[in-house]
Image (cartoon, rainbow, N blue to C red; front, side, top):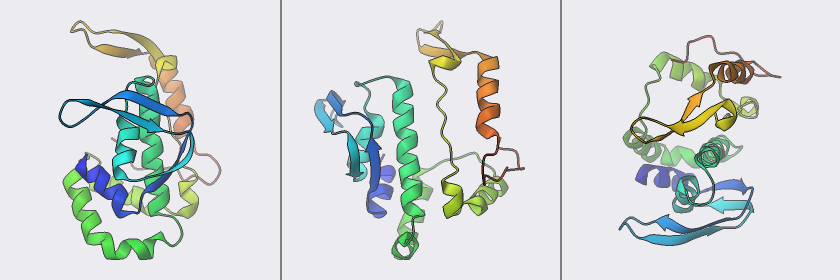
Length: 180
């Protein structure tokens, strides 16, 4: 969480269009208490701490909406980092950004695939990035034998959604390397 906050702050915050007002009177604090977290609907400029709260709040809707919020924040970070004029501002902060990312982000994406993905990123391709949350439309909500709330996927619906999601659109470039 510290790395996330620091990355958002290092790029000067992010702009996120908040679809509905967020008012969570039970947002958890670091000392296991609660506080009220409020964020008005509309375009908001978020610092790292506020972006993290927006991504993590749980008491206003469901896990699927939280996933969408998290994707929206990742999108805002990418949009900001690759926006016109941002690269010269980020260059002096590059060592700190790289160190923070190295200490905060773990991935199992193989390096050749990561490099290929990075090579595809440019201003035009950022507009082609799509988001998908596999929610209750794609399966049945139930409880596991251990009592955990789960979504049992309807494989046919998921397969159709993924085929549509990965179908190139407009100027999108298909990635030939497997994303495993």
